[in-house]
Image 1: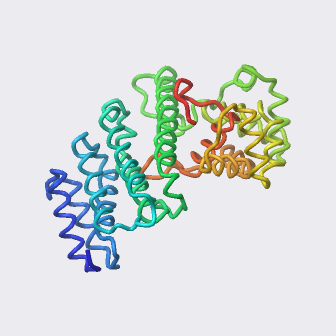
Image 2 (image 1 turned 30 degrees about the horizontal axis):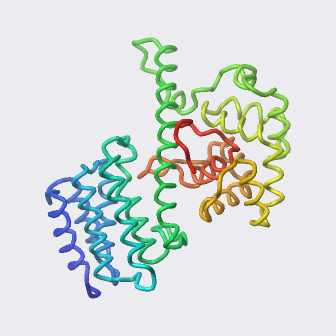
Image 3 (image 1 turned 90 degrees about the vertical axis):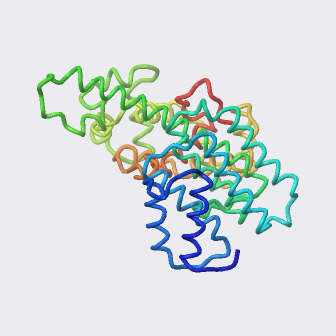
Length: 342
């Protein structure tokens, strides 16, 4: 495909919507066409741009692809790779195997996925194909081709872990709100859903598995804040965020050790693998080191409610990537205990 105008891009969108059996007057079709009109730059890979536009439109309109549609989505992108052959310096068999593994995963497991994961699945596929094309995901993060499968699994696990906790938190919040509000009341505040723990006795929240003073001492050392301010912030947290801070404080000695080792990845890997009993891939090591280095930023942003969810995905990517690093290190506990993240 040669460089072309937005009209060429629009024709590709027409073509791919037809392959995906999505009508032009469907909300995805309308939004995709509108988006193509706003794109004026040219590119060597209009096929990928067209599929990204359709993917973004599906997320914004909350459209969940069927198994047939998502397979067609992957096929279009795979065929696009074959046309451009940007990966000629790599082992073609290995690249084909990555595509095959994703097809197999979709065939065997897609029907079992939560709708929240299905919703963003086109974006996960786009990221993997972007890595196979250009060695970067759609956000510009550099990933080697041979790390693409690890990346694919990590993305699935990140969203699975987040949405499980997100769903439970909102269910708990709704239950709390309903039980404490009169049926005829019209004064239910949105804040009560955002922070279900507010107003609870901190002694009850903090006494499950560690003394409250120990948690506060660790948080004081991490943030430099005083005890009164920390108590106030902790009282405003959701149960899941409070639990994650408790986990970090429970593992504070290990966290300090990793902070000291963060500049020496070889020693960091050695200690982490010894502590967890698991081998760390290069991408997993990157996540772990990055999370440890940014623990102060993470803790303060959680305390201050500064991790605002992205409108399209409903999550905060920075927060979730940091939490994934802590999960890999065993510094916080997964909300899906039965599902391994490494």
